[in-house]
Length: 47
Image (cartoon, rainbow, N blue to C red; front, top):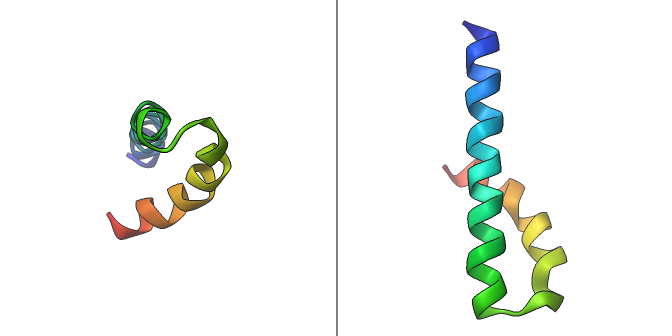
């Protein structure tokens, strides 16, 4: 059960980071990417 959740969690995190990369590349530009990686943990906590 816990192994399944771990796999799902990593898949979900991968989807979120991919979304962040695509979304913020268009809106903010490449120099904002480091801030996105830092805020990803906060974003996941809000979910």
